[in-house]
Length: 137
Image 1 (cartoon, one colour):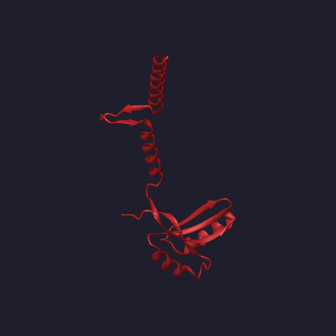
Image 2 (spheres, one colour):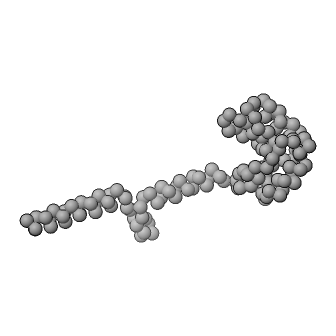
Image 3 (cartoon, one colour):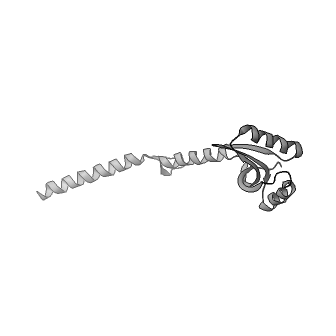
């Protein structure tokens, strides 16, 4: 009876080891390293996320408008562009509001300086953290 139990335990152990290796789908890479297939899946996902952010970095913008009407947002954007030709303006829609954010500032100090310049024309403007376009080289 002990031999039967020992044999049964050994077979059960081998079955679980085989099932474990099958579930991980371990394979060998060209360099001779054995790794889990999920590592490559995560690496590809990481690459795709970085491709989406290509040409962008953390920075600051000045938000000059916030409201539910698209026509009003476009009017504010047009007014800003006519007054400031060199500063880019962005229309952002986050349901149900339209936001107009301007500038690509690396530091909060740069954004604050620009905010002081436009505060007369856009009194409700304020600084926000945002992903900005990389400056041209």
